[in-house]
Image 1 (cartoon, one colour):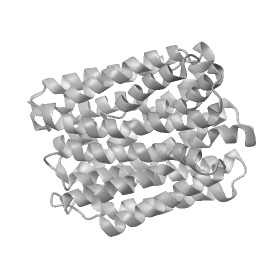
Image 2 (tube, rainbow, N blue to C red):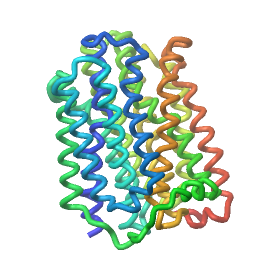
Image 3 (tube, helix red, strand yellow):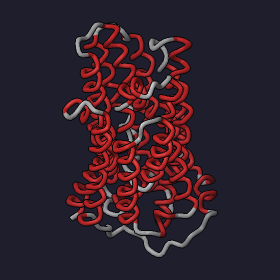
Length: 398
């Protein structure tokens, strides 16, 4: 039964998260059609992040994922997110209404990602890193899918938005009809706003969250700007049909992270979550610095290093969440996971906004290098966690 649930929940997550980067995939078209500058362009991505932060923060404060059934939270959120995103594709003609609707889409996505992790945790104790790794891998591929829609489907950005919304509706139906709660579900949780403070004070949970923050400083800034980075590099290199090739490359670079999540999950259950997260952040941190050095050069060499980066940058993501589910009070796992994601996505607002600033200062050659600060902080945090006695609670740790 648990493997069937793993399949359907991962499929729902893949389809639901198509909403996230649907507008980002449309940016090259919107730059021309809506006459956007770089600052406004950044806000188109950041509006979703802000909405997600607001949604997760409110969910954590009111313990929504622990008081209400997570399956219903997921389905309702997926349906509402599809509506807000779909309105943009149907009728929006300017950036103002689009930013508001993307904000609301982000609020809804707060009810898709964390609740799915909680549902998965109710089915797996052994192999939890692998299971959540598969779930996050599905999230990664779902986030990349709008770039594939753009290549294989209509080049019209409105069609991309509508396809993403249709995917989210299907995700809600799948979760509602084919996903059930697992045997490790803890029922009877009561509202307790003070629990947020308790989670922050716990040293093990705090260090796992610090590792997650270092990871988040890098990943969404990379995902948000890698499409334009590849587009500009291919254009500079003289690649024919550079817009189509950059869209396909973006899908591959982001999508390969899904494989990274699964492999990291399998290895983490065996060798320890702290070890695998440290190795992953070492690789992605190196890529932050080296990718820009290939800008405007060989497209093959650039794509190769970006694929390594895309493989490593989300690989550790599920292991921070899995660690929290193993260190946390089972009655408040949903709240703690939601708080973790809220803090992480709040941090992404800064790193996403800073990338174009660094492009102006140092060009694409070095614009991504400052993101390596995040992996460095994450490595130090997870190494500290590895030394604590409480690390024995984490799957795979010796």
